[in-house]
Image 1 (cartoon, one colour):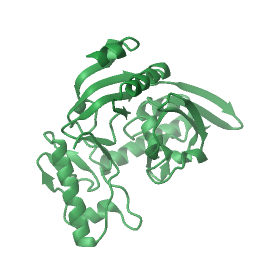
Image 2 (image 1 turned 45 degrees about the vertical axis):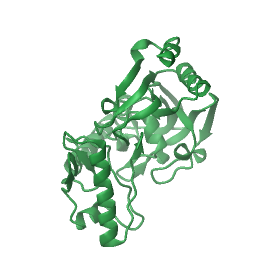
Image 3 (image 1 turned 30 degrees about the vertical axis):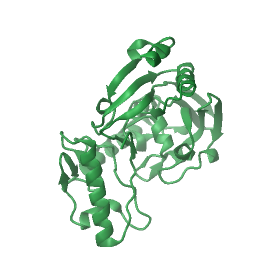
Length: 303
């Protein structure tokens, strides 16, 4: 309650929650409670949360849209801070369109804004769940393109409250990785380098990508997107399928019958069900093939 009072000095009480159920804030729709859950929509408020966390030695977890994480059933101790910073600015220069967007902008919403402005290049990410901040952090990709192909620069805050800016090279992008995976940095905004396009062509491409997603992925089930990373010399979903694991179920968690690279919540799964199924799939694939398959999602919270 003391921390709640501190936070409410600068942050609206409607944006602060005690013992908040994390299943409300993750696309898996599972997970225990966060001691304190706070939404921040400004750099000033984010700095304040960092200050309170540091001065009171309270653990802090930064959350985007909860679309690439699995929160354990025991929940998250300390403060969960959801970044909801919005921004959308366009600058045209040297035949390119530079679009600066707040890290809290949702990918789907951003794609629609770009469509209206007839700006192309972001279509591949239009169906990726989550925010632009999360997409940059994990170098999200689809249909042969990744964020590294369109990111120009990013502003971020360190845990001391200092703001920095990096160019494309500074992101150290790799497959589903960036500098933000290994460093305690909080993405504030990203500038994308895009081009002017034809509205009809952009819209048709987005519709086609959505159609392919619905046909090939369990779009109608709760999941965190692709559960496992692509292998260096194998297609993980194909390997899982060949091991006879498509449709394998533990409790309410199931290997998707539509796409074996996804684990889905059939409606009553616990996070432990999902973790047990992940472990089973990894061990069985290794037993049958000798291949290690790695998680693409992040597991957070008390074990």
